[in-house]
Length: 86
Image (cartoon, rainbow, N blue to C red; front, side, top):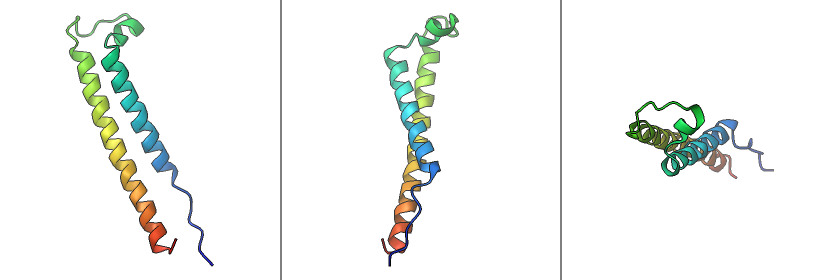
């Protein structure tokens, strides 16, 4: 009789979901760079666009880091399944 493995941990889903959200926000910021001004009325970089590009870089880095963490969690789960004989 095969031993049942627990489903993928919530940590994987949180990391994967947050990675996707960060990537989507990076794309939105690239397409609509003035969203800060539209949303808040503030112009932190006085029209230079440096704030928006900083946000894009930070979101892209966050997305990549979260995707890597989700990938590690995925591999951990697959290894546990393999070791359990499933």
